[in-house]
Image (cartoon, rainbow, N blue to C red):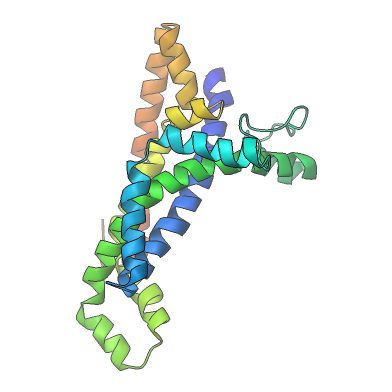
Length: 246
């Protein structure tokens, strides 16, 4: 239990920031590609979605470390925070704890350490969401209510990002829930690449040491976690689409 309390907040924090980057890049690039179908931007985003997902995630992480950490020296390449800058533990989420304690130095350090691993996972997963969003948006943009909205003279941005994207969001929400649950279960390669003290790296270490009680506890915890995330996504469905009733 103590190991979970120490390791899970690190994975949760990394997962939240990674998913924010994934959604911002993947969903909006997919919606824009659908809006500009068969344009240069559309082909560019389609190529991006294929290439970025084909890259090994550990290689992507190493390249980001090499460019932004080693060559440019802008960002740290390992750990959760700088030496002696860890905030007072309240929730275990360093960014949140730094805000709650008013520790600006710890907040800046925690955010800097989060950027590269979060960007690695966010870019890697954004390829899936770009393709998924584009496909769903193309289907929705051909429906009658979109034609009616355009006939009423609504701005194209409102038609696409308010009406079409909202109706295309159910499959996207499903994928968000699935990928977020998988991230919470531990992004082993990314956590290892960036020496991130999270659940994935912890479980790999336990396997190496043949610590079977910890392994069994971790597997059960992950199963409960995926179940909980799936339940939350089902509840959100009803809020996003009023046609859904349970």
